[in-house]
Length: 306
Image 1 (cartoon, one colour):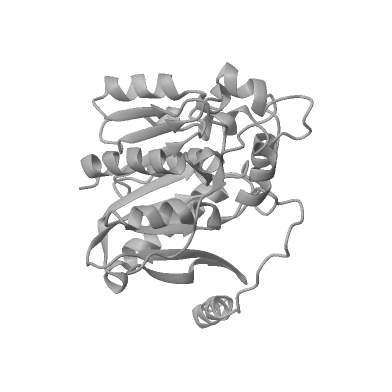
Image 2: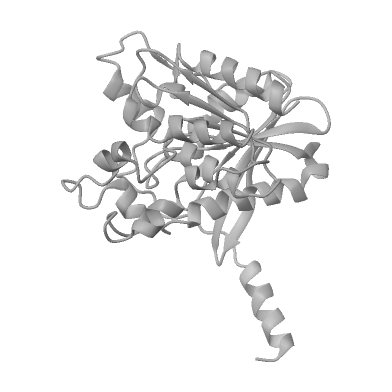
């Protein structure tokens, strides 16, 4: 194809209007549905508030990547200031569900401490299998670095944070992003898909497929190389970003955490761990647990994203 035709074709693709995927009625990983599941056992919980604080600007629906007519978007929350440090939040949902609005309450609380906060959408497993979600998050980081001056951000002070599947994605995207990411917060996300604990749940033969199996396109025995490749523990190296692990009282979501922390210590990389007692998975969606999550995150970021 002549060069002009190639350029014209590329321009036409880029000019396609954004189309949103059809709503998925099975996608119920959000605060209200999770509240309904948890309130019987935790009657004191409340869904964390998402009211925009005074002085915080929201810039919504910014397209950071486009595949044909499919646009991936993020929302940016900024306090007053310039060259702000940035925390990018990756939602959970078993790689197959969830919404970027999940992390709005935590994002807003971080803006009260001087951080710009970003919530991102990414391609779920029903749309694109591993490693698409990881690539999307890294694309969001690149977009933010490229547009930092426009929004008053510091392109050299970006952290990734996420919960559940989002914690695993944030960790993997961060440890494989070169020097673009300076710190990582993994909230109840797996560190090693191949550990005995992870396989007990993520490769459960009664689930056909399991959430992880759907993301990888096969069970561990069928796609073992992908399960290993997607495990953040495989990428521990000197100079990698420090990681804060914030965990629930549910052991299954800490698979590989202790081993990864030990390996990080062996190569001189800082890590920290905070486990909130008597908490369910998805604790970060609710008060009273969100505030200690924020407090631990801010203390960690002050040390590693000053």
